Length: 603
Ligand code: GCU
Image 1 (cartoon, rainbow, N blue to C red):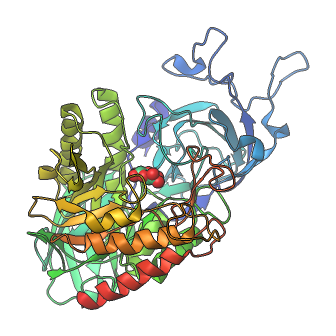
Image 2: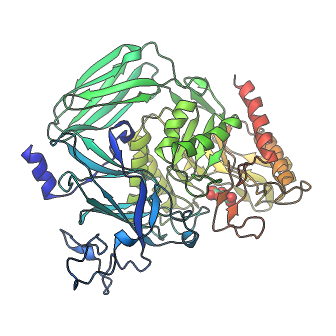
């Protein structure tokens, strides 16, 4: 026991992703947090612009919830007297003064926590915080996290008190050229602690990670691994699937890892039509954890996508992580329910979660609802391809996403990027990312939203040709014929040149329409224009021989600082099929009809 606490006392460690935190006993820190707006980062840098917590054992960071010990002590902040923000929630939609705010806000949450077992270890878990986050507990720095859309955890065993713990979190959502994403995006840069915060109590040696899925290309062999974290790494592991009367035992090696291989004969494969999930119990001598997992195979054969060996057409829609009705980032199960509910109403069997990892609730709910999922790393438009730190950042965000969702049957595609301009540096960057993804998970498909080009002098011939295409399993591209490129009638004349013997999907197409604005089909911004574009586009795409799926841009109108047309956009991208107020536009029903037909075709 002493060894553990000694290690914990010596240093406070950034913990890798703990798989299935949602399946653990947790103590929520959601709710009201006091906050300080700090545009000049006075709480972080001294007047020489030197960071307070630059020394190796920092007790710094200025806004560390200190209280004047006597009437003469100088302290120029006091969290106790500060207003509050809700967590989880972006700050932009909580206060009109913060709608456009990009900078630093300090959060503080006081909490009492008595361990259920004094020997246990304790961690603080964040579902996500955008973008750069520094975390302090009881005046001590826990660590810094970069990236706005993936979970992070710190061990706090050595710092925790039974009462009056002070958790201080500095969140800075300033956009950075070397960032992932970088300076320009077509979505609102919501800042803050945007997902759940929880205390997680775990045994001294616990099950930190596991991968339990069917082996690539096999219908009858579950493979993967289980990893332990703690001092007692060499243990017996048991995996049970009670409904399949399956029990398998393995032993971890000195690093606490056991590779698993479990034959399964008769089981119900997971699919949108029957999203069967099995209770899976993973245990070792000191810990146990359970969750519901589905088993399905996903692969490509020539131009076909095979789900459980059968050709499937992906009837999709793109989704941003936003609740248009309430405004702001979506973060809850209910938000996920609303968004995936609309997708189901469209008769979708697939969604593209754009352009960054959405909350874990989305993939888990897609598992239950029977919706196939594309998940994406926020490598968007023109990031710094030659910058090693940018690559490491992208790699970490991708790895964290895969670690978090690798046991989700619904997730079938890892996307490396969106609309990135072709260059050697870019293609190498994406190739390396694809390599990382395949090394972490060989069971799923790799793709990216690529671009289309035309030969000068022949605007009606569209060519999909990308040096990254040989490294993907599915060729996906975005096209905006009829919106950014001509009028909808142009769709009728387009000739597509796509020389890949791979499944082809259209990851985006669309047109803006203000819900409730009506006119003739040539009047931009009207529902009729959007409706006409959908009809002509779906007809155009259906002529592509390798056409195996589509995810139009986009399910709902969403906020974007790039969209400024008064009385039409007013800070919103209006390409949704559902308006800001939740009302469906005419094109919604065009797509639904098309999907009803596709469903019949692939029955
Ligand atoms: C792009 C991009 C989206 C954007 C959309 C649009 O293709 O990928 O992020 O919102 O087009 O212009 O509406």
